[in-house]
Image 1 (spheres, rainbow, N blue to C red):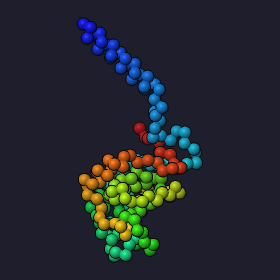
Image 2: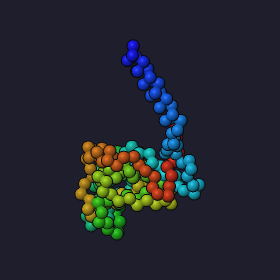
Image 3: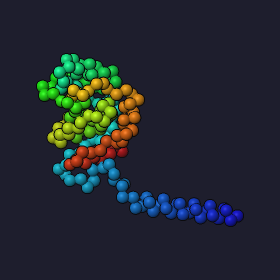
Image 4: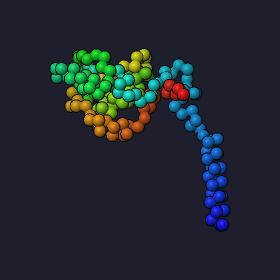
Length: 171
């Protein structure tokens, strides 16, 4: 009988704790744009599926045909490759990802394909949801599916860049 009373008391204490935690929750609006300055852009921090990601693949190396071959690899992985081409100015990095507020979640996914070795170039004034993938001299190959999944786990969720707020979450 005594054990039953103890279990009952623990249940009541746990219930009170949960109610207090829910009432005092200060993160209820996390991920929303509430409290965000009006003039700040709203960043789409939704992690996109590959089929929903639009990219342009640009070769910033002296290796001919690199944008075309990597573009084909991205197409084979269900990305929407809109353009392939060359960039005159060479890049020493593995890759550079250029995007605007609508491309934050897409750029986050793409970063995993470069094992978190791609540089970000965020442009708050950019209005499209396309991510420019600029391949640099240190690029060797895209990550495997297993490596991408592990890298996404390491990267966590997409975050709104400084000077932006996350788009409101639609219910």
